[in-house]
Length: 252
Image (cartoon, rainbow, N blue to C red; front, top):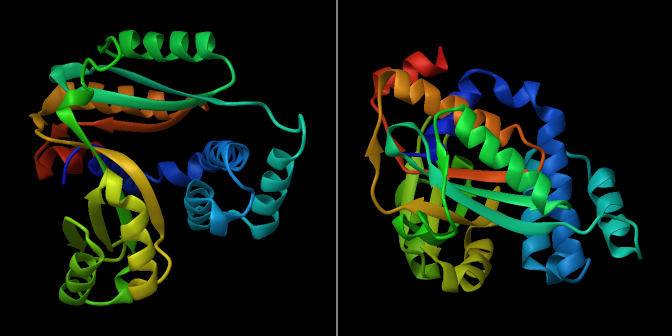
């Protein structure tokens, strides 16, 4: 397991998710707003909105809050218009980073992201400077309760997916990936065979990983943490790989 997933696991162990609940809600609501504005306000007819609603529910957002956000976004002039931006660069140890943002002020967000890269030992590059090192894929996550690993693997293959990883444990899940172009068809098939996923989105997955340890790992995690702390930043992806010992030290 590398990059983004490792960072999320460590942040979960540190209890950072609860401490940043308000910021998480801000990001979820911003995605709901953008999805509702770009398509129909009905999650059943708007795949991006449906994914945003699933993520919001997984984040313990109430149904009323979600519905109010959709209604506000559907009204005239009711919500700010957010623009999708992508920033790329390198962190400590030469780790490649992709930062996705939704912003109502491009100059502010670009300046903040660049400043964060610089402050924590990174270097923001030009567009497409590192994205060639990643694949754009569809990713679905299901709770372990939907079935055993072999059963989920069989249904994922039938749905047209490319890979399945089952992570056991209290926070375990089945992670299914597919080609970006197959995302809609695979999701429809998986929903029929496995039910509603806990997460369904298009993500950046590294083709290769960069090993990182020690102080560089600490600096990298501080950089990622500060980027994710920015309200405009929705997702941060990285191609690092580290030992279990380093993960344990960072989580402690």
